[in-house]
Length: 98
Image (cartoon, rainbow, N blue to C red; front, side, top):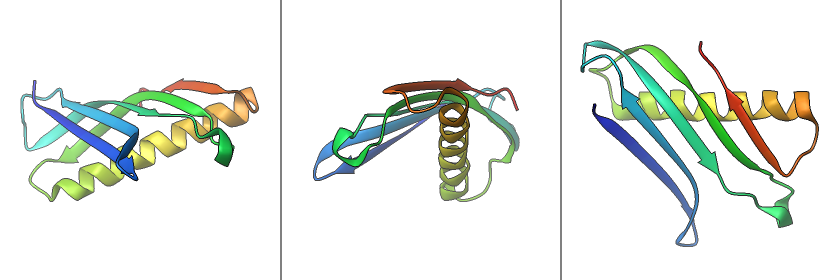
């Protein structure tokens, strides 16, 4: 399985990471299983998050930034949805099978 790893740094400190595994044997139209983790930032009132889900039917022969955008949209969308359901909590976990 091929894996894409994205790490977000703030002032040389990792604050978030996402991993996406190609589950389609590198087909031209691929499905990716995604896990995105964000560390809490209490001073900014940002809770920790651990989101899993899928990016489906992605055209693999495009710029990697298209896939990165979809992964970020999944992470933000699932995280915000889980927070809305659970209220303000110090840690949020969400998953999606879309």
